[in-house]
Image 1 (cartoon, helix red, strand yellow):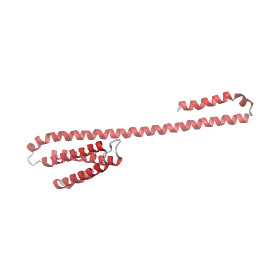
Image 2 (tube, one colour):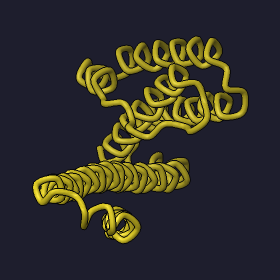
Image 3 (cartoon, rainbow, N blue to C red):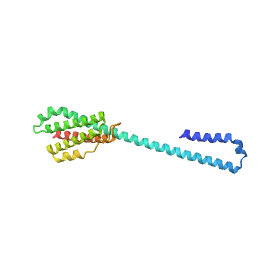
Image 4 (tube, helix red, strand yellow):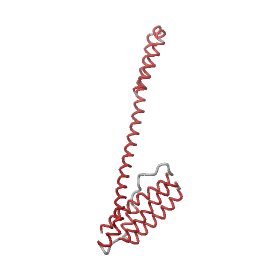
Length: 201
C-alpha cells in the first residue's frame, strides 16, 4: 500500500514540476482547484488500497483458520485409526480368553468393513471414477447398516447412519466423487468407535 501511495504522490510532484510555469501563470482559483483535486485523488487512492489490503488479509485469515480446522480433524481421525489398528491386532488373541461370551465375531466383521471402506477410498484416489465410488459406497453403506441391525441393537445402526461426514476431501478429484469419499471417511470413524466400545464389553 505504501508503495502505491508514494507512486501517486510522486506523479503529482512530477506533474507540478513539469508544468510549473503554466501553473504559476494560471489564475489562483484554477491552481487551487487543481491542488484540491490532487488531494482528493490521493485520499481516494489511499482509502481504496487500504480496503483492498484489508479484504485480502481477511481472506487469508479465513483460509488459515480452515486449514487449521482440517489439520485438527485429520489428526483426530489418524489417532482413531491407530487405536483401531491396535485393537484389531490384539483382538484375535485377547478377546476369546478374557471373555467367553465376547463380541469377537462381530468385531471381526466390522473391522473387515472398515478395511473395505479404505479400499473404496483408495480406488477413488487412483481412478477418480465417480460412478464407481458412488456404487461402491452405496453397497458398502447398505451392507454395514444391515450387519449392525442384524447383529447388534438398533442404537448402533442409528449411530452409524447419523455419523457426520468428514470435512477433508481429496484434492484434484471429482467434487461429487469427493463427497462420497467423505461419507466413507465419516462412517469409518463411526465403525472404529463401535469396535472400541464392543471390545470393552
